[in-house]
Image (cartoon, rainbow, N blue to C red; front, side, top):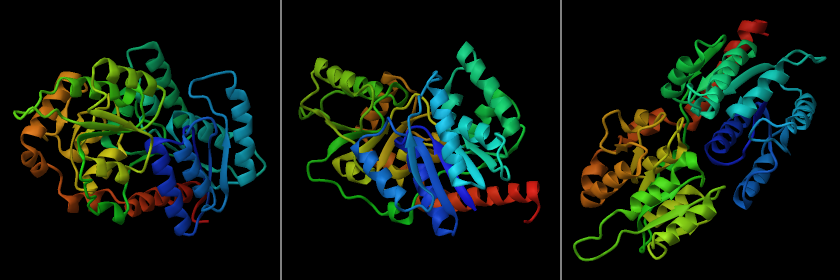
Length: 377
């Protein structure tokens, strides 16, 4: 099949997901292309995108895509449709809110060839909005209506699926629950640097990921009995980084909390003993999967699909509030062996969250819906 993946921002978990899926589908003998935004991404992501574009048959096209609804969407829309038609896909798979709209609208748009199959993976996206607000209600209505012009929705966690059902109702298309996956190499332990800090935050520096909560919680941690202050590193970039650096300086933490630009997570994990995921909302975060696969002890907020990874009653779970995060951070420092013993079995992790399982399940979903629409041709 000729498969085109469309998403807006080439950063974070969505980019990781699309990259892994695209490369695996190429290895399976399919021809894959990507269309994504050209205005976001650091040098780290841009280099990765350039490398990815040379590894997929249909290439990688970038054009401006606005995060929020804007008049400039008209330009993006026509440009995206033109890219799709040039690639002549059998399948258009949209990821995230904007990619999901483009894949379903332009997959349904009249064209001279056979209409492609239209798939959608929310990855949280519009499902993060509070359904009691006007914006949340509008997005829920759009999700419900767009499911009428969709061949299949892939949910990355049961939480995401249940959230869709609660906010948008039963979709008018087929759905599958397919977890994100890691490569076999990512289950190799990551060694620690000699001067490793106590805690690591890695991710987008934006409100949704809770970096401000991490800083506030860290600031309230007591010194040890021997007078040693806890230490931390924060790795990533984003719209809030400058404000977060100011927050750290104002709290007098600059000597014990260091910022670093984006880097591969396995490189970042060398710098700290424990990983903290303080997100306010998630779907199925790769950071949690990658940290556990690498043998790190971690704590994370009870949001999205995280309890499906750590376990519903895990002592590593907390609420997305600074006092709760600080409590878990302090408990982890006091008794790291107890938390290490509570981490999920790595054999279970390898069996449940693998790239091969993920890519095979998604591609089989395409094949199943193709058979339903076109027969076995």
